[in-house]
Length: 116
Image 1 (cartoon, rainbow, N blue to C red):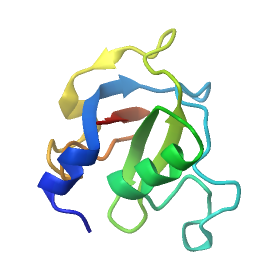
Image 2: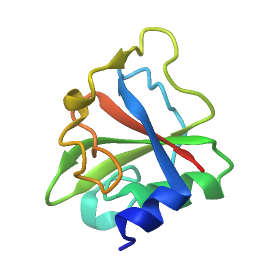
Image 3: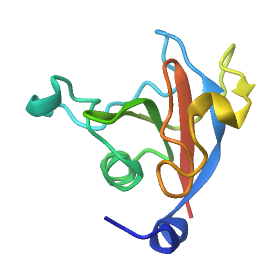
């Protein structure tokens, strides 16, 4: 895993945003599922989500619904904070340093990241 310094050179945390089933960042990190977690969006951290979304041409990515066993869900997008997907207090996305340079996301709360 990358150190906090290495992560900080690649990515920046942009804030905590509300999500809904009409996804704010609708892009998928992969077409195929990560079988051990039962879904293509699950099992990511900052670096693996960033690499996956960047590789598919997206400018932003988000971690959501962190759990210790399955890590976070990963979503990709070209924009964020669209429509009703308002900025929330950072604490609503979880502990500030949980994912190195920012939070790991919570239920319907996107910890949004960009590339340096």
